[in-house]
Image (cartoon, rainbow, N blue to C red; front, side, top):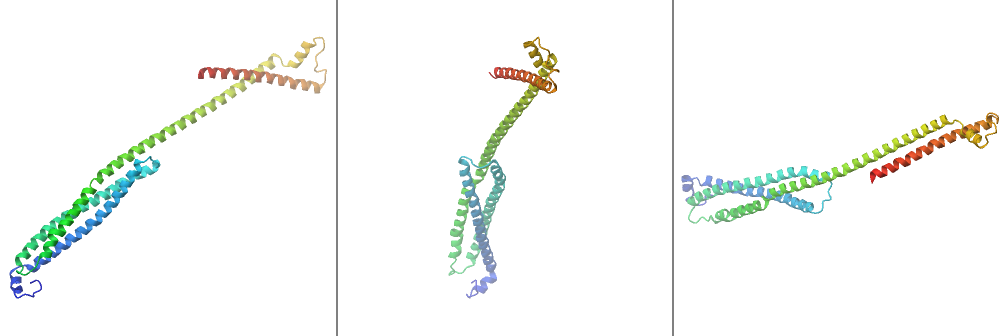
Length: 278
C-alpha cells in the first residue's frame, strides 16, 4: 500500500494519513538509533575516564612516591575530569530520555499504521524493532548508568585522599624546613658566640698586655736586675742593637702574658658552658 502497488492504496491514502504516519515512524526510528549511538560514544568516553580513575586510585593506595607538586597538580585536574565525567553521564541520561520519548511516538505511529494496513501487510519487522531492539537499547543504557554513576563518588573519595596526602606531605615538608631553619639558627648563634668569645679573648689579652706593660714596661731588664742586682742596667749602655732586642723581648713577654690570660679565660668559659650543658 505504501508504494501504490495495491488496488486499495488510493482509496486508503485518501482516507488516512498513512504516508505521514510512516514518515513520522521512520523519523522516530532514526532518532532512536542516533540517540543510542551518541549514548554509546558518551559511555565509551566515561568508561575511559573511569578506568583511568581506578588506576590512579590503585596508585594512591600504594606507598606514595609522588612529589607534593604532582599531587597538587592531580588535585587541580580532578575537578575538571569529574566535570567531564558528570557531563557524559548527564548526556547519557538525556539520550535515554530521548529514546523513551521516541519509543512512545514510534509505538503510536506503528499503531496507526497497523490500523491502516492491509490484511496481508507484514509489519513484524517494525514490531521487532519496537519490542526487541529498543528494549536492548534501554537495557544497555540502564546497565551503563548503573555501573558508571558510582564513579562520581569515587572522584570525591579520590579528592579527599589526595588532599590528605598533600596535607601530610606539606606538614612533613614544613617540619623538615622548620628543623633546618632551627639548625641554621643554632649554627648562626654558635658562630656569633664564638666570634664574641674571640673578641672578648682578644680584648682581654690586649688589656692584660697593657696592664702588664704599665706595671713593668721592661720585664727583661727587671729580671736581669733581680738576678744580678749589683750590675748596672743593660740599656742604654749595651748599645742600640742590644736595647732594641731587649725591647722586642719585652713586647713578646707582654703579649705572652696577654695570651696566657686569654687562654685561662677560655678554659673558664668552656668549663662554665660544660656545667650549663650538664
